[in-house]
Figure 1 (tube, one colour):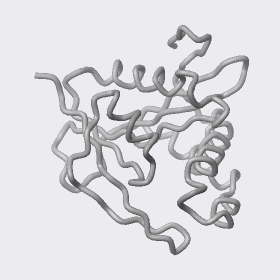
Figure 2: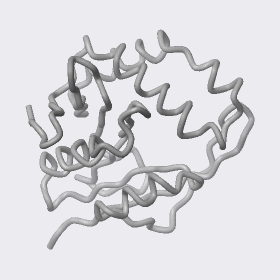
Figure 3: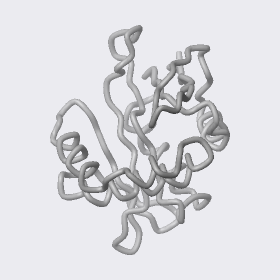
Length: 174
């Protein structure tokens, strides 16, 4: 458990957190991607289905998920584990997700989650992540934490809308 300088507690997630994580995940998507994805698609995302997905994910031993809480409320979460990229070398990690309730944006919660993750994986880990090319706010955030685009992109399809995702990487310290 990590206490931050803004009264946020970061702790390991457990299966009982799945519902809160799902709500933050979907609320964040609806706000962050409203300019990219159709509103009917974003509105159709189901919190119960997402909760079941997170219950399964939180039961796996090969990944780590932490939640940020304040005043008994889940403000955000981060999840990471072994890289799923085809070209990943042994030991490469991937930041699968870092999302905040939009009411927590700009309060330093994402920074605290990122610092927690970076502290746990250590400076010698190579870490990748994928972010929508249109998400300038996230690009800026990841750059501030030592991640850079590595030139690899992929196309994903959400509700028949093709979107480009850009891979960012944080190289290990030597």
